[in-house]
Image (cartoon, rainbow, N blue to C red):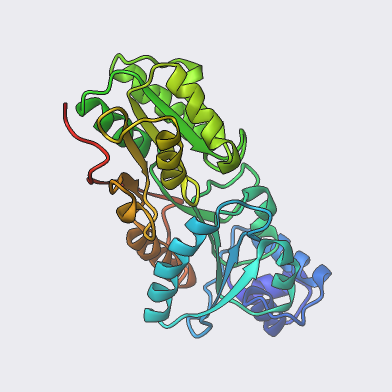
Length: 319
């Protein structure tokens, strides 16, 4: 089907259809909905203008979502990659999404924002949306995702502690049940423990926010752990090291510790911490590549999964 036929069936001009597909802000909502309805009915996918280079990055409002450190690390790499490819960037807090209706952009990238906010995206915009670190909900049509392999990352951390001789490994996952990747990480840790024949008790995998870390680590110590994995959070590893010192535990002699990489703290802890790290450069490159393909109207893989890396430092040592 050609754009001329879309215009005829929607009862509007060709220019209006073109403006709808380029998300021109001066198009009434009912006309936009009518054009999209016709396009969906006939399976029409518009080619977007490659001259339009504005990208909206939707980021969490940091006072609401405790994921700001992750967002900052992704944003650093992503702004570098998108700028290199000639895109202009507008950053939009997740609580101001209505602004999308009044600006022109060629695509959007969401970092760490819960996906229900983007349900039925394809009914509102004929533009690519790429989710970073989240998977689309069942009603998020037209949405791609780039994420790190959480199950592989959990297995990597638990596997390293096991290789270092740990036989009772406890974990603290940053967050709350049902938030972000918390449930996926929890199942990944339990699976990794079971695969190695190690105790996989529910009480060994704690879910908490930083204010509760010291208490939760105390519970794990009373449960007899010899290895600790602190996953996520802006400074989970630093708080864990402080908690262990309060309980009189030495790292790695008494407790071996793996945490999530935080560029400004992990290597400067005493001792420097072994971590798992998402490959932020690879994430940014995959997002930019998906955006390029989406703008050109090319077929894009709905999901790109990138493995974690293990960074070896002094908080773990073979026994």
